[in-house]
Length: 242
Ligand SMILES: NC(=O)c1ccc[n+]([C@@H]2O[C@H](COP(=O)([O-])OP(=O)(O)OC[C@H]3O[C@@H](n4cnc5c(N)ncnc54)[C@H](OP(=O)(O)O)[C@@H]3O)[C@@H](O)[C@H]2O)c1
Image 1 (cartoon, rainbow, N blue to C red):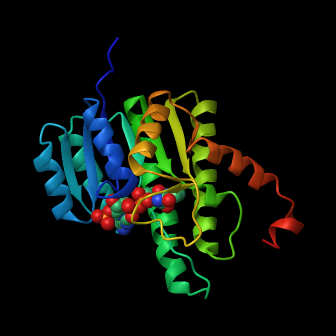
Image 2 (cartoon, rainbow, N blue to C red):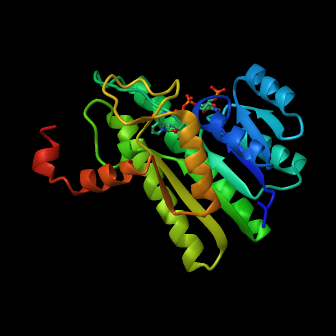
């Protein structure tokens, strides 16, 4: 049996993991709504694959307007089966500069929450759907180099768990996938210490397979699942010395 064609929105598809994932979905014959702030990149993607891509340009941290943009995009696509939140990011913040933390909170916490809630309620209204978001193995424990980033990713991981539990207990046909990467080779990945860096196309194909199987958590690459497990088990007295 061939793949069932789906309509997918990828929020944050102008670069990195979101862009590569949009390419995989399009290649597999799905229709993809792509978003980001950089309109020129979105136009370029649509002109390359006009039959596959629908675009919407907006800043997800503008909480007054972002949901209207998403509703318009979803309607233009004739409804959506899957929504992937890839818009996110962060910086190290050794000096504890609040402006840096504020930007991460706006993006990874506030906007993420608004987008997730909208997606969940949208699928509830339709009777089914699949929400996925890209978190990070960095969310397993606090980080002295990037306390805001690691905390915001922990928030996302727990938020998705809450939505997954809600869907299960309320017997809704809504699947929630936490895509949890270690390092992926994208413009965002700036950390000076990097290892097991996955090429973005490899990461996107693995994420695609995980979404097709409706997995609860997809570690990218799979060996990062082992690191995440180990890191969680690390006793506090040792973690604070790292
Ligand atoms: N790369 C890694 O090693 C890695 C590891 C673990 C987790 N992650 C997570 O994976 C996700 C994607 O990261 P990436 O590496 O693919 O980064 P990226 O290449 O910088 O891509 C980020 C995407 O999000 C969009 N975006 C960012 N801020 C936005 C805003 N305010 N409004 C609308 N769109 C916005 C960007 O589009 P515009 O700039 O056009 O708005 C871009 O398309 C992030 O949540 C990141 O934390 C990445």
